[in-house]
Length: 145
Image (tube, rainbow, N blue to C red):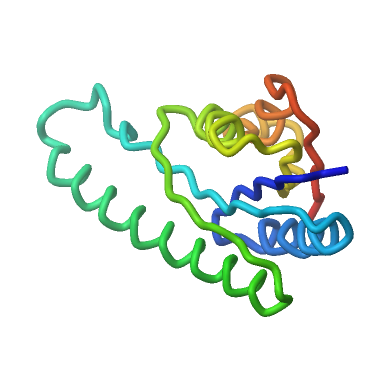
């Protein structure tokens, strides 16, 4: 039923729970798996030249964090005998990076976690998962924390 699963990760416990669900689905359907971490390279856009050094540090730290999250996720899949490819992508909006990655690998399912924020915290921080759900043209399984 599901031939290719995309699993966005961010190193959080919620992402690890999504990995567990994706493993079960991949085993059941013999699915291909791609793990993706999206970095927003423009986090400092519009704040002036005083932050150029901060942006370089941010990108370096984000790339290191992304590599670690991808490595941990792919190792978890491989420990269960599931071949998983990892990819770090850049996108001005995280949800768009996820959906673009899904399209580029022809995924037919996205399995991702949700932190379950509500109220003011959700309004202030936004919800990548909600944006993926509202813009996706493929199935999305949301794993709640």
